[in-house]
Image 1 (tube, rainbow, N blue to C red):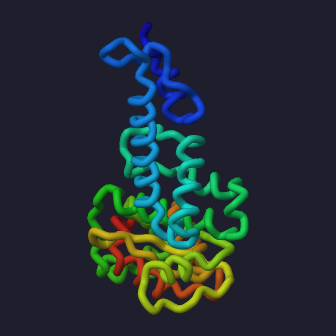
Image 2 (image 1 turned 45 degrees about the horizontal axis):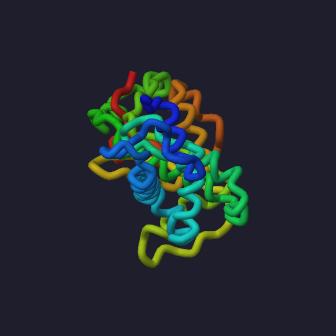
Image 3 (image 1 turned 60 degrees about the vertical axis):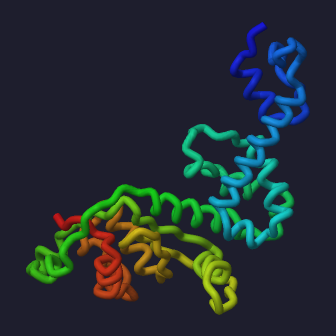
Length: 243
């Protein structure tokens, strides 16, 4: 009897299921013990991948909690790609529904942040614009200009202090987070992604620019420091062209 791919996959991610019919040892007996070992190795490997993907989540909840949670996650969300560097995309949604994690309501947004950092790390390389090119534009031309962004650049908004929580768990002597909304910009000027705290006006401005607005169209908030915002983007090689 041949083992179907569906039966093998179902048994692999459900520890309550026996080894699929037709899976045999060399002596013809059902390979139950071998399948159990393989199933356990797959679970351990996926748990390790989740630990590597969400180190801050792991630190916040503790090793034992994370391992137990990872066991639930991997059975609800098996990999859809052989590339383990992208495994865990459903973690934010999972955390919103996972009852034992509800006492830490900011976990889904921290998961979004860690996913964004990973996407930035693996994003395609892109050349950056010469910072002098903006200064060379006449005022009218500058206000009518649009910007193209490097693939690594992302903006995240949160009702929780995601920047402070992330730093407190990744940087020595970082200040204790204060529970307030925070927005962040993620860039990758070199090899590693960087996270930058943004105020609301800069967040709205950069999000609008990423959506194709002109620089002039972003000047809707008197609190916006456009010069500082552009300096941050240029300094982080976030802009690839001006048009």
